[in-house]
Image (tube, rainbow, N blue to C red; front, top):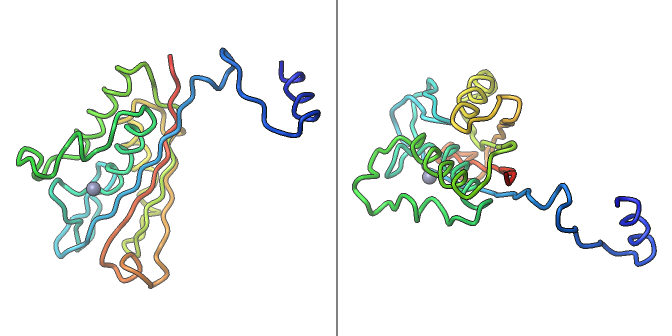
Length: 183
Ligand SMILES: [Zn+2]
């Protein structure tokens, strides 16, 4: 089949639609992004962990910017809406809510729709603290939440190079992509 596709591509010089039943028809990708302001007080709640730092993320829930991006990526991949629809910030029940619950609620919906997580890749944008020493623990914790192996979790960190809200230490952001596979 791949040979036929290659020949068609060569002849017509354009992509050929993926056929029903091919290996990629059951894959879905989702993207998530989030930003929260930083304020005085610690520790920092990130990726379902507490990281030693003298500043903390501010929000209606526990403001775990990384888990919020993961939650939105999960929901987006399965076309299930977004985190604001699932956990409105106007609902007092969501005040200080543990964001691990949001990931689990999104994962439950994703699985009920017939998908499982293949892998996740995330970037945290933070001027401080240095997150490198926590990457392994973050991967283990997020793998646990997503019911995948730590090898299927990618975490990277970028600074804001001293400019913008991230660079000035006023905020942290996170971006994640999630790949789902249909059963
Ligand atoms: Zn958020």
